[in-house]
Image: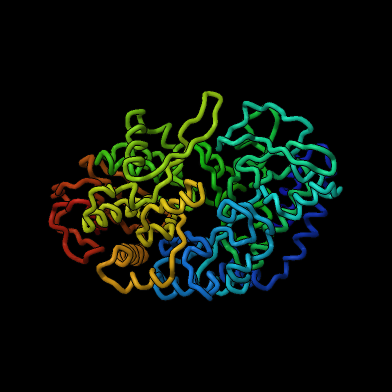
Amino acid sequence: MSSIKLLNYMKEVLKILYPGEDVNKILGDLKSILSKYENNGTILAKRKKYNDQIVLNEDDAILITYADSIQKKGEKPLCTLHRFLTNCVKSAVTCVHILPFFPSSSDGGFSVIDYRNVDPEFGSWEDVRHIGQDYRLMADLVMNHVSSRSEWFQGFLQGDERYRDYFLSYDNPADMPGVFRPRVRPLLTEFDTAMGKKYVWTTFSEDQIDLNFHNPRVTLEILDVFMFYLSQGIEIIRLDAIGYVWKEPGTSCVNLHQTHEMVKLLRTVAEYIAPYTIIVTEVNFPYKYNVSYLEARHEANMAYHFSLPPLVIDGFIRQDTSILQEETKRIREDLLFFNFLASHDGIGLLGAKEILPPPCFEVLLETTSGHGGLISYKATQQGEVPYELNITYYDAVNDPSAPDLKVDIRRFMAANAIMLVDKGVPGIYIHCLLGSRNYLEGVKESGMKRMINREKLSAEEVFKDLLDPESLRYKVLEEFLHLLNVRKGIQAFHHAMERDVLQSDKRLFVIERIYKGKNLLAVINVSDAKIKLPQYKGMTDLISKILFEGSVAPYGVYFLQ
């Protein structure tokens, strides 16, 4: 689309968002912001590299990690991370999603104090760019809220005229029972300000103050931050909690049409300045809401596949892939999903609850508790209901009370293989890559259930484990790297492939992938039984490099061609 058409489209979006405002003035201010980045060297170099196209293929896999997931005393964590990547992971992944590395006050970096600076405890923008020389970079645009300690909110508290309308505040504690609540905390938090007592909108916590996008100046501020990230070499932008950004009294205040217009505005701005940019929406809701952010021409490029993690666990609990198969068939082939099993957050349940029969859902909760995990809840008008599972994925699919290292690793890798063969781009959380276990000590120390899967690892201990062929971390990492490297060489793993979920024994997940005439049959056993599959005897297993003998080993994984 030409630059003129893109600007006209921006104007149309702004008209929808701000019908009572001077849209020409807002567009003029936006053009002034964009002009700062039109000749940015980093952006221009990437435009040339990607020929102004969005480039993703079978090589791509994304590692998800905090800047300080691995720490070494006396070394900035971003440097430690870079060393771990280049020495241990190498080219098995192509992109690194560094979770918020900005100065923050809580929630694992998601209470951002300063959007434009790297937390000096982690390193610097130079350290981030160094990682970007070896890997593509993905980062979060945390646009729903800022920290209570941010300059913007402190200005609001002090009565600064500029920031008075940056936040949603009320003189009285308004009752809004229809608002969707992802937490059990109150929606509004009381603050003493220079204007008197105010009740301020805080969707996630009293330290995370929601921004008021009814104010076009706030939108312009965030668009400037967005462009700044691209100028630092970020290629993939994760829109954190995007479904919550626009609020309208009398509605649920999630996934409103104005929210979709905000995504369109971001996408159009990216196409205008940096058309190679990939926008990923993080919408922790059932499938239809995720899909809604991908259907319009100018919305997201990719969305999180939130129903996949709990359904994979269910498949292994019951040793039955029937429900998982039906969900896989439902995924539209013309849309692109970000596949993952674990992340810094818990395992979301909103999508699974609408798919799993109630008895299966209850067993999922019971198994999580039985494996040492925890359950987080959200508030509804009917009371608290399960919202997410808090557990490492290794312990989610394995019973810690009955360990069998060899079998447990095979089961864990079979679970991850489903994520790798399903349609989409795979994302691997660092604690999955390293086979981490439940970090209950962290939960006890912090009082946060999500800390169970956010342990900060000693670099010395990690590197020591990775030199020991008998250690869990060594074995899991080796298996992961092998699967990822095999996957990279198979054209059928291109995300734009055609796929067919094949009927078979319910204990098997069998999917055929076809791309440009090249096909692959992926077979994964979610059970502890050996299963005959004679019709594929004689095909070559690209993982083991030997001929398939006609039977699938317990928790076996095969790429047959």
